[in-house]
Image 1 (cartoon, helix red, strand yellow):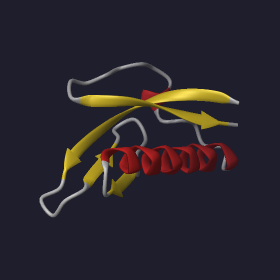
Image 2 (cartoon, one colour):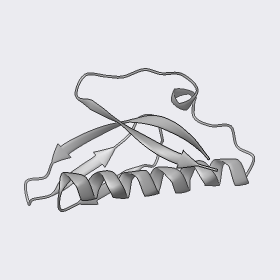
Image 3 (cartoon, rainbow, N blue to C red):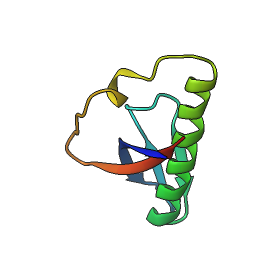
Image 4 (cartoon, rainbow, N blue to C red):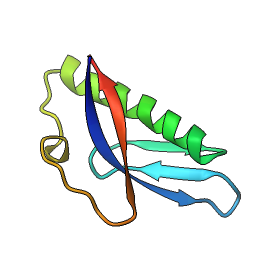
Length: 81
């Protein structure tokens, strides 16, 4: 099993909890009560989106083929088959 590093942008929500998005994986949106829960959900969502790209024969988004990190972003490992 391989791992891909993706960049996440995590922000606190006014109503509590956190929201994670990623320019690396279009469509990734994860919300959790804690930072740890948000990261865990984001990993699962990213894994499922990447699996969907591969199952449908779609090319991975360009950011997953190159490494670029923006200030304020977090890298998380995502296990992929």
